Length: 156
Image (cartoon, rainbow, N blue to C red):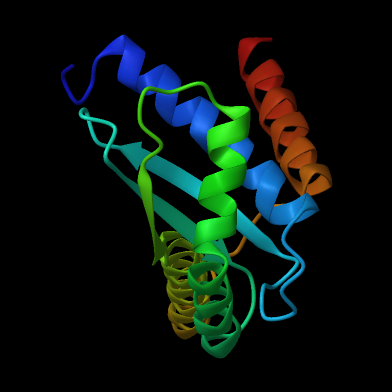
């Protein structure tokens, strides 16, 4: 079976769904943060190993504690997975802390900060220029009326 075959993709999604259910409903380790989510699962084509990418909302310490709790409950989780998912081999699970969500949030904050700085710089730049005199709508109408009157007098 190839790595990106349809069968492997289905197995990955099924294992991800079942692992999520097992971790949230059955594992009672206090080190596992309640805001833990499984971002992706990669089951090897030979079904021997499985990489589970875990994202934890919170501090770096809570992420490390969650990984430690999951590693200690790995045998239990693998046994529950074997009962719920019908596979020829139950894969050996490796939990990996996924920091891509945190990285994305950090990059979004940086972009927002740069946009704010750019706005402030534009505001300073606009204030440095001399403001152009703008005609109010009333003034412009009066000018047109005067011009029309002048043109009317010349024609007659």
